[in-house]
Length: 576
Ligand code: FES
Ligand code: MG
Image 1 (cartoon, rainbow, N blue to C red):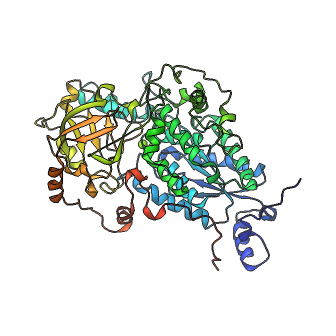
Image 2: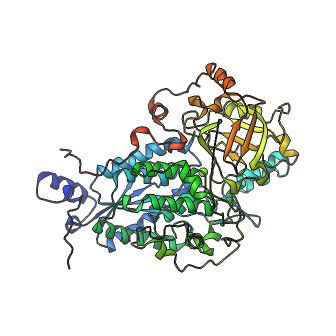
Image 3: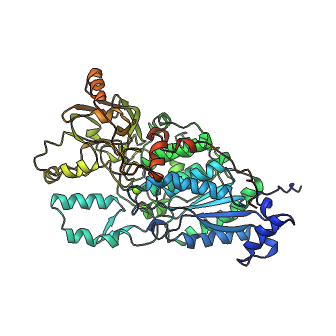
C-alpha cells in the first residue's frame, strides 16, 4: 500500500512556477542548494540556541551537523536557524526574564518560515522550555535534542559539581574553611569540557524531562556533551524527524497530559530542579493541557528520589549515564505501576517499549527503590496564609529535621537589603530564625531570579550552622540545596502575604502537612496591607515593562498572559 503523499507546508513556499516560488527558491539557492532538494522534500528547521555567550550551548553548531546528516539520509532538507539564546551563567538580571522573549522568537521563526518539522537544539536551563513553549504554540512535528552535560568536574581529585560546589565552596570561604586562592583555582576544574551543568541542576533536569515526556530520543538526559554517542543521538533524531513529518505526528500528540504526568513522577525520582515546576506548567499551558501545582504534589508525593546526584546526593551526570541513565530510572519506577507505559514517544515506540528491559549498572548512582536517597522525593507544594496560591520545596535537597519548623522571621525587603544586612554582626538572627526574602518574584525582580537559596549569615556559618529555613518568592538554581521554600504566590510585588511579613513574626513550615503559615491575625494582615505600596521598577519602558505588565505568577508558569495557548502553523499571507 502506498500512502498518499501529504502536501507539505513548505510547498506553499517552494512549490509551483509563480513569481513567489521563484523568489523563495532563488534566494535559497545562493547557498548552493540543488533543484531537487526543493522537490517536495520535508524541510526540517534546526532551531539552534548556539551562542558563545551561552557557554553551555557553545558546542551546538557542531551537534547541528549531526542532525543535518540524519535529515539528509532520511530524504529531508535541513535548514539551521539561530534563535535567542539565554545563558544562565552570564545573563543579568536573570535568564528567566528572557525565557518568554526567546519563546516568541522561536514561535514566530517557525510559523513565518517554510518549515515542516523542527529539531530544537537546547542545553542551558531556560533554552529548553523557551524552545518547547514556542514550538508548542505552532504544533509542528518536533524533536528536542539536548546538548548534554559537561564531563564530571574535578578539583584535586575530588568530584565537584557545577553550581553545587560554587555554593558550597563559597560557604567554606565565608566560614573560614577555604582560602580565596583555593576557591578560585577550582574554576577551571569545575568546567572542563563542553556541555551544560553536570549536576542534576535545571539543565539536566529539563533534558531528563524531555526524555520522560517522550519528545526527545532515548538517552537524551545524560549522554555527556563530548561523548560521541551524543552525536549519534543527534543524527538519529535527524532521521526520525523526517519520518514524523511524513506521518504528521505533531508535538501535541506526544505531549499529552499523561506524558506530563510521567515527567512529574520522573522529576521526583531524579531529585529534579524546582524550576521544572514552572517550565512544565508553561509548556503545558501552550498546548492546552491542564497541568497545575496540585498535579505536581499529587503525582510526586509518593515517588522516592533514587538518583544519587548532586545537589541532593553524591554523583554527577557522567556517572548517571554510565549507570544506565534515565531509562534505568524509568524502568525502576515503572515497576511500582506509577508510569503510563503506553505514552507514545517521538521514536514511534511507547515509554514501556523503551524501558522494558533496561539494566541498572550502578546501584550506588541509581539506587534501588527500597534504599532511596529520599523516600518521598517529589516536589512538595505548600499552602497556607503565607502562600494562598502555593509555594514549593524540594525535600531531597532539604534537611529532614527542618521540614517541620517554627521560628521568628528575619525579613529582607529585597536582594539589596539582604546583601546589606545578612553579614552585619549585629543582625538578630539564630539558626532557628526563618529568613524571608521579598520582591524577587516574576514582577518583583523582575524575572524571578535564582536568589531564593540566600547564603546563610557569616556568623552562623562560622558556628557550624549548615542549613536554615528560607522563604521567598524567588526561584533557586537547580544546582542549589537547602531547606528553601520558593515560588511563593502571589509574590510580594503584587501585594501577596509575603509582602506583609515583619521581623519577629512567627512562621510555621510543615512539609508533611503541606502547610506554610504566618502566625499573624487576619485583621493585622489587613491593616498592614492598607499601608503597603508596590515597589517601583527601574526600567519603565521597553521589554521589561512588557514583562512586568503581562507575566503570570509562578503557579501559572510565569508565561505571558497573551502567549498562553496554541496559535498553530497555518501558512501566513504572501510577503510580496
Ligand atoms: Fe548553563 Fe547550568 S549554567 S546549564
Ligand atoms: Mg540554573
